[in-house]
Image (cartoon, rainbow, N blue to C red; front, side):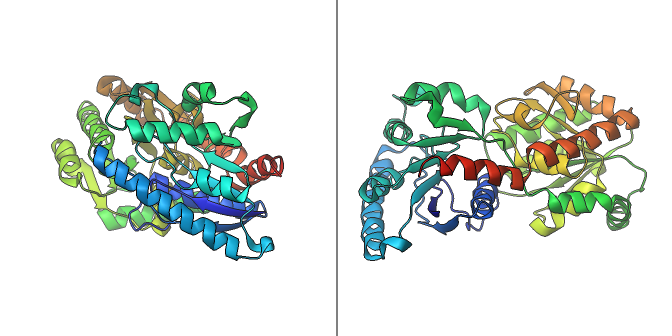
Length: 378
């Protein structure tokens, strides 16, 4: 099957790393693994982060022109080379899909969306135009692939047939993380030598962009929480940067030398970093589900995270980690302390986490599920 793939929020080859970029790449990889021929249809970004009505109207007009050019381009191709399905990843009121519905309708091909969301409270807000466009696209979709279980209640009222909404568990390519975990001792020794820490000192890990809004809030909760458990030995390793790096640094500054900020870490180096640490910690304020949580689990780390959004889809409380009320620094601190104090429980959770990712959240399984869903459309 020939797939035209589109990500209106951020194209998969965007230079700035993020969970959205990673998930777009993973979906393209899964579609390819399912036997599809995938091409990136466009890099057109429909994002309006500010709620500017004039900007949204300009984006909509430009989107209409881009869609028209795509239709003309595809029609110039021989029928055997045209897309057979359009696949849009991640549309919502701030980044609606102005391309997919028009192109799919013009070519007479199925329209598929993944990780769509709909919040009725945005109907009369500053993104009302984007809200209406996203809703119209969801209504038009032949298949809605839900990656976040918390989106379901908003999506179902838009679908004439409830069967159009099909779940797909968030997934990663677990192989590099599993490989790193098998060489954990070497990675741990190398990191300790690099940082000048004791190899036996428990290492907490956070891998997250530093952006205004929810990410900044999470760093503040993390800083407040870890200040409460200063009576125990631990170090916090932080991988990430971004426009709110100064704010994140200020939130962690009271931790002193216990917080080691690495800045942006190359994607290829992340598996070894995960494997070298003992426990992944992230308050997950406003998190959709958190691919970094899956990456940590794939490397055999238990997770302490806020219980919000789709996080329970990827972290099973008291089995692969501990979930706490989102934003509650005191309870978060208690959860981290309990796992620092019980290495046997911590390692058992990490083992179960790695097994769960291999079974339920790995790319080959996602490819099989996606392939089956798409076959039903043709």
